[in-house]
Structure formats: C-alpha cells, structure tokens
Image (cartoon, rainbow, N blue to C red; front, side):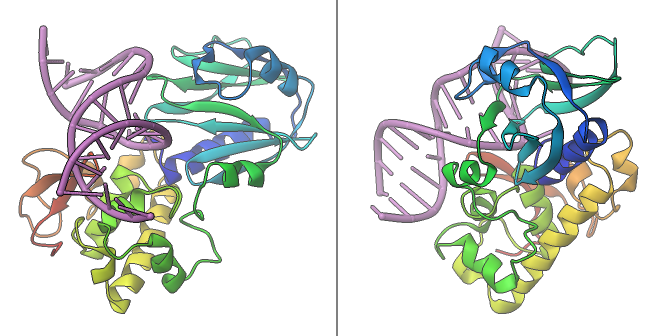
Length: 267
DNA sequence: AGCGATGTTCGCCG
DNA sequence: TCGGCGAACATCGC
C-alpha cells in the first residue's frame, strides 16, 4: 500500500504515538532492512532521545529526534506502522519495535522485507542523496512546474509519474487513479499533454492524493470513504469501469500492471 | 504449485 | 543519452 497517501497516514499514526515522547529503547528484529547503519548503532542513536517532529517526503517517513538526527523509514510494498499499548507483543513481521518511556510503543512491520530503515544526520541531505524529486503535494509546485518536473516529452506519463526522481510519492496504484480521473491514457507521452491537460493532471493529482489521505488509506474502513467513481477498488480482471460501465483493461508498462478504461482514457 | 504483488535498482537493448 | 523492459530482491497469499 505504501504510496504517498498511505505513508502520510503512517506519519500521522506515528506522530500521535511518538511526538514529544522519549524513546526508552528500540529493538531491531530483522536487520536486513537496515541501510548504512548497524543494528547496534541505530538502537543507540534512538535510545534516550525525544521525537521532536515527523515529516514525509514522497514515500519516505522521517522522525526527527531532539539531536537533529532522523529515523528514516521506507515501507517497500508491504510495510506498516502499528501503534501498541505498552506490554503488548509486537505483531508478526515486526522489524523495528520502538518503546517509549511512558506508555506507548510503535511496531514497524514489513511482511516482504523490501523496505528500508536508515538514520539520517540531515533530512534534506538524505533526500538529496536519494535523488528524490519534489513531493507530489509540494505546495510550491504549480501546474507548469509539475509538468516541467515530469521531464522528457518522450516518456510515458505513467512512468514519469512513478519516477521518484521526477515527482516523489506516486506509485502504481495512484498513478492509475490519477490518470483515470484525469482521462489520460497511461502510455500517453508527456510531450503530448497540452496545457489544458497538464492543468487537469496537476489538479487531479492533488484531488486524488488529498482525498485518499482524507479517507485514511490504508486504515480500516477506508474503502467506504473513497468516492464510488474511483478505479482503486476495481483493480481486477473483469471489473466494470465505475464511470462508463465498460471493461477495465490492463496493460504492462514500466514493468508494472496498469489498470485503465480504454474509453474514458484516450491514447 | 505457480504467479503476481502497493517498491527500488541494475543491466541490457534499441 | 534516454526510455522501456525484465530480472532480482524476500515473502506471502490466492
């Protein structure tokens, strides 16, 4: 699940549980996700420090500590943030268990172990180092800057949207949703998007990502909160397009399966 | 039992 | 040089 809206939900969950609290200790249960830091050093860096703030850039979640360093979390395809009461066992697939000095704990889970856990001395330095483009909801981006950021006119718009070095935070699910809502075919070239379409793409990106956040994806019951006209809950073979009733089709692009409606989304 | 999966990265090819 | 593709990574669920 973890694309921008999901990670934003995780951030809020993390925030509610951790903000202002001091970490008593941190258990690393699987060190395969660690990048550039040893289990011992991470545990040491976290323990005794207060969580001063949380933030998000694209699909990355940062928890900044009172010493300026940040715990960096990336969730791969299957990560989650699970708040727990003290004394409760961490759930299955927990890779990092953070215990605060009062009552709360947080489990970071990763079922398929494709995520990453890192420690950044400097958040913006880390973002630069990862070559990440601006966050998809970056308030300083306008429609023109957004299209500019998508880069080469020759690339397929879906691939461009999913390229984290261009715009950060959009993955397979939400690129499909955005293009569906904007009426743009996934393989349309960036260069073929006129000014009007570009404006629509930009606005739709905001609408879709913000609505998904507002619906609390991927928390319990989010499906009922999403608009019925979304493609998201119809990503299966034989599904009907919620807008025209036609068949939802799939194509392969960028190594991923794109779901789309060939009559609502013209090439 | 095999295949595909919400992500990222790398090597290959045109 | 760029973009697209397939594989690899690790693991699980259908």
